[in-house]
Amino acid sequence: MNENLEQKNKEYWRGRAEGYSEVNKEELAGVQRNNWTSFLSAQIMNHFTGRDRASIKVLDVGAGPGFISIILAEQGFSVTAIDFAETMLAEAKENAGALADKIKFIQGNAMKLPFDDESFDVVFSRNLMWNLPSPEDAYKEWIRVLKKDGELLTFDANWYAYLVDEKKQAEYEQDRLNVAAADVGDYNIGENFDQMETIAYEMPSTKRFRPKWDEDYLISLNAGRVETMTDVGAVLYSDKEKINYKSTPMFMVKFIKDTN
Image 1 (spheres, rainbow, N blue to C red):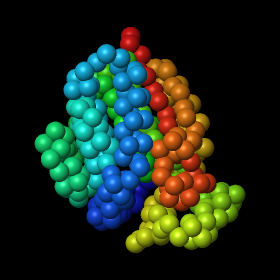
Image 2 (image 1 turned 45 degrees about the vertical axis):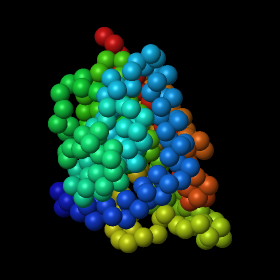
Image 3 (image 1 turned 120 degrees about the vertical axis):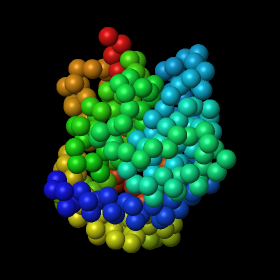
């Protein structure tokens, strides 16, 4: 990806902070708050059985306006939120309110993290990998900062597959019709959405079949074990999200780092 496109991507997300924050506020006020809280708490505590939550260090990569960082800090985990956009972090701090003092907010690059090796028990990302010019570098970095027996949780979807696949294009267009018929509000219509499509078309993940690619790549690193859940959105999404994203189910990729 050329530097000009990378800069356009950064500027796009810096400008999206306020609007994206409204989506996070909707999640914090909706069923997503309880859904994500219970699901992630179970994922983490079932792996770290008997650990005190305050001793479990979680890195939220691409934290955006803070939804995940907020609910995990609320549950007592030690949370660090990193995002490349200072505007996103400003929104996150505001959304966190009284919890802001319990979260470390750091501006930085998800593909070149400013942390020592084996710094975190859990590395989390949501809806980020698809938007990175080098997913391979990102995964290597996330594993680098993960402690031995640490847990990497990646949540994502084939968000822009409709740009390169005719079948997905038809399904995507049907989703838009279903959203309009249900009158629930369309998450895929907004300011400068065409600009994001242009950027997404150039991203490597758009042309990959995921989560199969993620699974294969992580296995190739020979650094831990991998498992996937292909429609975790069925558990986590609100009814509005299920209508909006019917053709793009959210998946989870879990990686447990080797202890040797």
